Length: 136
Length: 169
View 1 (spheres, rainbow over the protein chains, first blue to last red):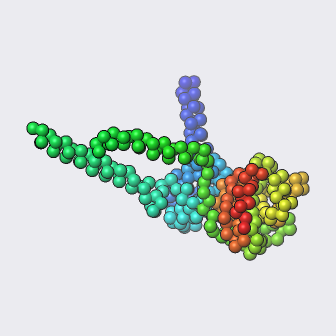
View 2 (cartoon, rainbow over the protein chains, first blue to last red):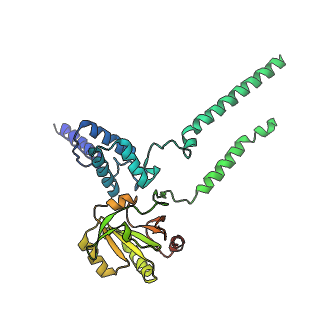
View 3 (cartoon, one colour):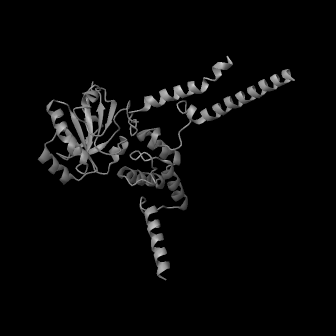
């Protein structure tokens, strides 16, 4: 009995810790709540740079979460909320960078490198085959 | 020609070494402000001293500083004496009392002196969000044409002031 109790208690500690950074918020619909959750996970906290808005306990993150909540309840679209944040805090607040000329290499660089690697691979294979054909 | 290929890894190493070396000593916390190059956003804020409502048009036409501070902010205590020095040297500073209480702010000014031309109260922090502020102290340089030209996060002191001053024109 005591054993079970202690397990339950330790579990409660875990659940408490994971919920600590979020306030109680009322949403008018389940959809709004889901949109809120995905937005605060996607937006980066401008103060504590390696956390998203959902995880951060800093003052500005609390304010911005409330703002996202308000904007969603006011009927703003996800894109409008994101644009609002980017206008104030820069593209820095996006965990998923926008597609633009500045981020071209970031998005497509790996594929370009993969392409170059593939071409080099084929070139080496062809060269080897040609040489082997000459040797035999 | 084929021999040269053996030096490819060395070349790659050297290029990466240079790139990484250039990053050493850079402030990893530095975040560029989205407001630089834009006008000060519109606002309607109440002044701490005389309860008048201030709007965008009431801002000075000469270069000035916008300084976000609060009595809850430990670094603002450190910054305050230097702001007084700046004010005595004739630098116009607009203070934004950020997410603070009026009574505490009045007490602070009485005890430590007032370096600000005007102090506007941003109790909810909404003007702070419009300016992309993440905390206090934070200071913006606005030039003569009303454009934000520089943002400094953290304390202004004798060491970094010359650089900030360079933007005031």
